[in-house]
Image (cartoon, rainbow, N blue to C red; front, side, top):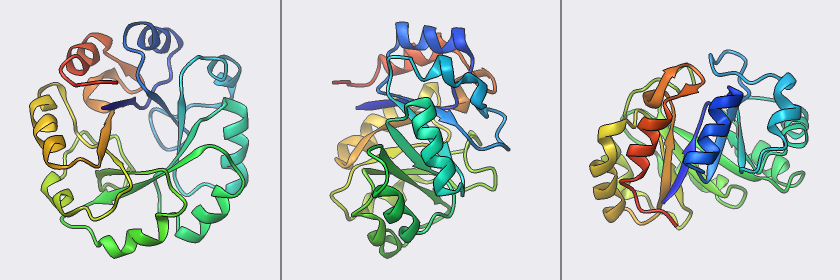
Length: 209
């Protein structure tokens, strides 16, 4: 199971995360309205870190996304807004970074709306719908994913906390396309500052490669 820890920002916290947990992915949020926003001033330090970094963007321009990919040495781009398939297609032609499309979930999902993204994304990420574009700490009803019809893998996000591991293992057993989990606000002492011990205890319960 892949582990992504999102919303990282503080240097010492990040180094501790890498040393003690070494997640598969670390998320950096480049949405200026987020309390976990990462500015360009951190790029010199963060770009050199030996960890696969995911940049989180919300309705950003193609040029700015590509600039951040180069500046921070991003291995994946997570599109968390209303980006259309045409935008994703054009972006995919101009970067070697993986592209992940976030699907914000209310009560149900129209799978037909996702088909156009399939040729251009590496995976989907399902998160709780919110005007804040993530970081709400709220879960959606995971049963809506039981009819997931594609071969493409996905990550599960939205309100996952320390007590969620049993529910996640049960869900993963029924849904083999689930590749991993995205962890954020429920493991924080403050926005952008993760509680490493909480993360460690939770991740120890999950199978990892």
